Length: 376
Image (cartoon, rainbow, N blue to C red; front, top):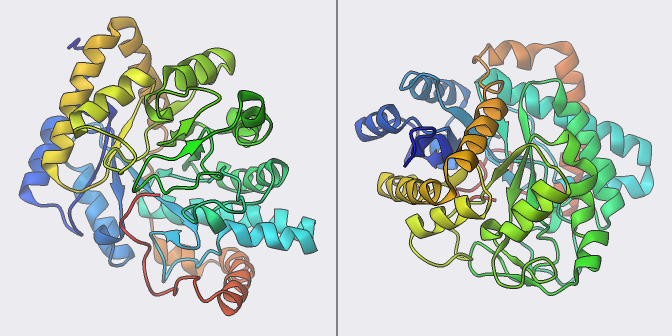
């Protein structure tokens, strides 16, 4: 492939545990992936996380960006002693009672989330969810959505983004072009959204289009949106990622695949990676924590880049460098943050809603348990 880009430039990979193995150090040094994403299997406590991040950052120049899913509710990798965030859906419920309080709380949640991630050295949050909660859909989204209408998602996710914006952490809207109506879980099988283009534009696409100018990155959904492309899942679809997103919407930011190992996609990991790059993704997530899976993803990137040609590959490289370079925060003193008076007051307000949610909904996770290992 062209030397304009190296395969690792497009890879965001998972790790096997809470410390780097020798094999992982060698892989990170040799392949220099764009990012490393952390899951519960990589997390014990803030000191250990900062130690792991320091080890990762020492493997390559420039160092990989650090990624995480920190949505709130059941998809929250970092928990105690950090803030216990309610599910975004709790904000939607609160808005019915007090719209002003819900917006203020959403901003506060975004700010606290960004502060906590940045102080640990994490620069990318795979949030907010811009899907719309719909009756009869598979529960994989559910309370992860900010609301039951495009307008509500736009208001509350927009406020969350306002809070995050000053922290230096990159936000990523997901799951484009919209997973809320899916009646299957894309972790297991391929959902199909059988709506027309007009219906999709009025509903699923509306939050993404309204907030695209404030989102430096979007994550794809592994699903077929029939009104946009009846033949390919969005992650592989040039009709969706290139013709709609890049050409019609003029979206300049990063496009990131959801985890390639998910059950919705067919083929080997290298085939999935090639399809995603050729379809219009810039960065590819391989979250299994197995180095042979990351290596196969790199093989697919190499083939995909060769097929795209030098001009398209150069554009991918430039978007990745421009998009990720500002989001490598230096780890700081997390204990000092937790002791700060303003931080503590904001956190107390957020955690009141979390405790209320847990008292009403026993499915809300315990604050002492980290979020799961499966990618959101």
